[in-house]
Image (cartoon, rainbow, N blue to C red; front, side, top):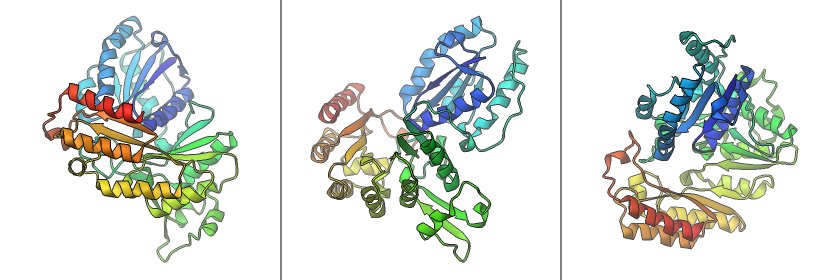
Length: 390
């Protein structure tokens, strides 16, 4: 049986798709490029931007025609999807499942095949392990994504991530180290640590809970002076996690995505400076260069803070590659407020920017605001920033 995997969204979605591919490989599904040859079309999507949802709707008729030609064809949907979007797709796909319940996918496929009395179906025992335990089928040979956490606690007014991914959960350090060590053995050149808010990684563990783990190297505990406390609870922060990974032997570089400006600590900057294996690159979303708009966005920082943070980073790492995210046309953004963003970008001189034209996302606080900037004006502002930075 064959499958076609279609991925929309960020690097976290790409990483999830690598785990999806691994699960499908175990149940004897083979990847194909041609949808006409697929018995399973699986879309890993994202409700963060309306564009991805619109693109799926644009393909829906074509997929239904394929189902008429192949009665064994199953169409499934997963990823960062809002409940409102799930309802829209309910009658258009055979299966919608939570990415965190990926180990249950084989069972779900079996149920669909049996209900439809398909000619060919799976006979396999489903697994109930955490989906992060699934070994990914990496899509490249040199660069690998390693998720270290999922979810977000920030609730930026325009963003759906806390509603689709849930609150922040940090992955156990022993799991991360095991995956990273495996990648080093396979000669991967760059390891990118992923999280919706990667530098808020904060893993609390009990010494007793990992005492029998073969994947955890206790030399790290001694080297970084992580000692057993009175209550047997220890904490691994993101800067410490970077230091630990950087001590692993091998020729590789470390990168990470995505950082929140409010969580960039002096300790993290110092770790980036001192650790040669950490790439001197930083993706630091600005979103707007106007204080009032930043407050409306619930970004937890203002322009002066962001500018001083950049100056501090550049002072310690003169050759750092800085990229950012910017949203144009946020509700109520005046031309003057947009010009404040332009002025700030001229001052900072980003190396790269991912610029989005605001679109309201159902369920967010910003969706209640009047989307009063025309599409033409959003496009005009996008062009100005894109020409300036990119």
